[in-house]
Length: 313
Ligand code: GH3
Ligand code: MG
Ligand code: MG
Ligand code: MG
Image (tube, rainbow, N blue to C red; front, side, top):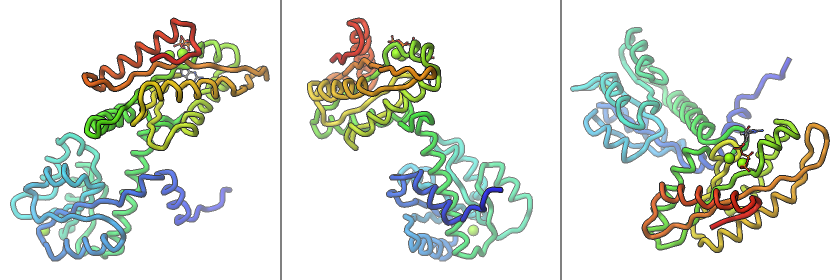
């Protein structure tokens, strides 16, 4: 039988998985008409290192959430004008709020409320008055789980790099930043050469090892500010902020040589090497995220047509 897991150790392990997300303090928005109570909650959560905002009624909740971007909502059920449940139902219709964690608080003890709360996707419904340490613990645990889920969803499970959607998100942000600061930016697409043949000749497991090795190489060699993601099967994308096309070509070519130097062993124990081709698109005055993708793809296609194992701008 497995040894029982120490919950504190498990929590620490989860924190490590969430990694740099932890640097961001947990954010909580409390909506309660009883301002004395919510000030108490806010103080307790603040003492636990969380960032807290309070609202005393449902009006302005949507704007407050859009502005503050809380990890979790603490929502009072009994408020004048609009119940917490009604507000939650409205919030669930808003873009980006469908899965915002909500903890309900209520002084009433009706079982019906609990069922309704769970029906609108609430984490739980706690009875008022709630012990502050319990509330803080509940909030922390729910946010940790939500952040862990987000971190898992954002990453590709085979290689641990960002997924396609996350790379696109970062690309939008970095393009805006580059424009604001008047800095260059390059976007690169990498595609493993003849990867179908790697799988066919050396086995799918060896193919997976190749993809993991490439992802590791990209993460190790690139800067922390560079963004690496898996775009599709054997295709990766890299966002290089503050990098001209010429610099990007040098960097990618170094990676190309580094990757080619790695020796792999297949199912038959034979040693083999794999190459990749890359296409680079520099940010131009008239380019946007869509045209960057198209340009990198076109450059990649050119590199393939020109014989593979090369980088094209
Ligand atoms: P090219 O040089 O033109 O890029 O040829 P290619 O064989 O790399 O390209 P193609 O798109 O024909 O084949 C890609 C292959 O990648 C097919 C697919 O089975 C394989 N593949 C996709 N995802 C994975 C994966 O997660 N693991 C493994 N082992 N193989 C994968
Ligand atoms: Mg109330
Ligand atoms: Mg491909
Ligand atoms: Mg390929």
